[in-house]
Image (cartoon, rainbow, N blue to C red; front, side, top):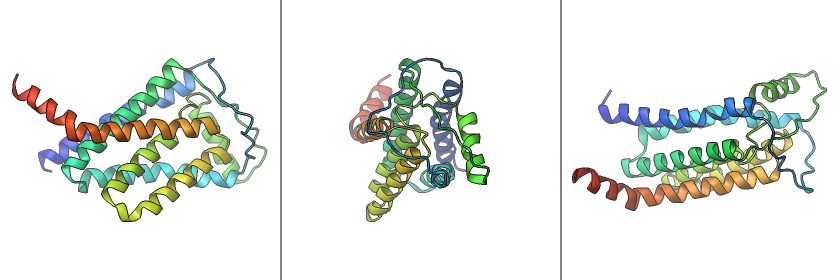
Amino acid sequence: MEPPLKKRILLILLVVAIQSIYTPTSLLLEGGIEPKLPIDVFPLWVIWVIPYVLCYPLWIFALVWLVWKMEEHLFRATLAGLLFTCSLGISIFILFPTYVVPPEITGTDILSRLLRFLQVAGGDHDAFPSAHIYITVILAFFYNEWYPRGKWIWLLIVIIVALSTLFTRQHYILDVVGGIVVAWMGYNFGLWWQKTGFKRWNILHNNT
């Protein structure tokens, strides 16, 4: 394995490590606010747990593909954007705790059991912003930079994921909006870092 690929893998694992703070905080945090609005009237529809869960292999594939194939300048932008987005999301979870009130699931089918498992394993905190949304959206933004012809595919994926968080009642509308905003900020930071911040870092590093 060439050293640049090893470095890419380590850097992406850093992103994963930061985002992994989500689980213990969601399970252990107490108090905070419930970011529910009067327009949060989505019914529980357990079939939406399928795209909700499919996000996980989708993210893994997306990260593996960008590590393996993405051009260096775009990889730097994507990495910076991911680091910013995940760090900001985790910081908000810790500093401003939010939670969801999980719905009662009475079904005994496999999808109902899966959703009940997610409720227990994922905890009820870290609602705002939705990590499902900000991870999906930041990847969609940079994949659109990489494969602009697939823009409608990236948009469709984001819409499906957003609906999955709402119809499984894992998140509220405000959480979805917050996730989009955090991802948008990360996307713009990544582009800025690649164009300006990275060059300044190299100049500073070379002068020391």
